[in-house]
Length: 213
Image (tube, rainbow, N blue to C red; front, side):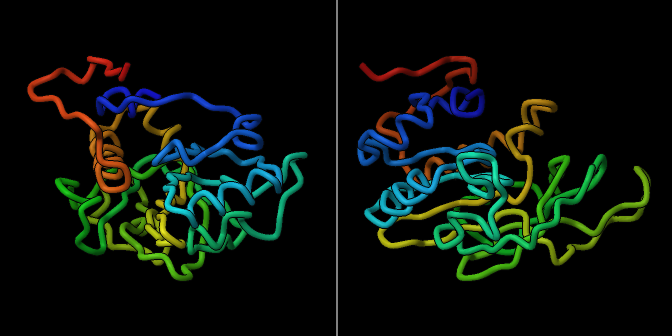
């Protein structure tokens, strides 16, 4: 909520009932911040939404459990992410980093190293394009500069006419706790890439909320 607001992005807050029963195509982008429990009906509708041109931002364990909290063998939205779960959560990461591994509009003005979210989930890449990796774990605050690990942190995938951006970690939770400015910038880049805003503001403070009427 705060990251959308501070990027001057008009948005609605919707719930699981809306996802199951209402028309999703009115939205160009749907954000699912660690929406771990998801009914099979909702997962099916979200797949159809992206296939027809909608876009998703998803984090951590989104769709890894069904509507009753039963863990699934993989993400229900695995095809949409282009990423498979390896069923292992790691952390806490108190002084570790993420690093870009390619050039992409989503990574514009993002530093070489940004703080890692507190917890990550081990994944296996399918069709998705990796954008950022976790660093090798540091032994302490004053360790040498880290090198990238094999663990994917951020990926983008085309599915049908739409796209999905997947964070393999507690991205939103870590922003709420620490307000990392790179997280805010990264979110803004994703929004501009997947759902370009209908209006733009210049010299406006981040605290200014924008509502379309």
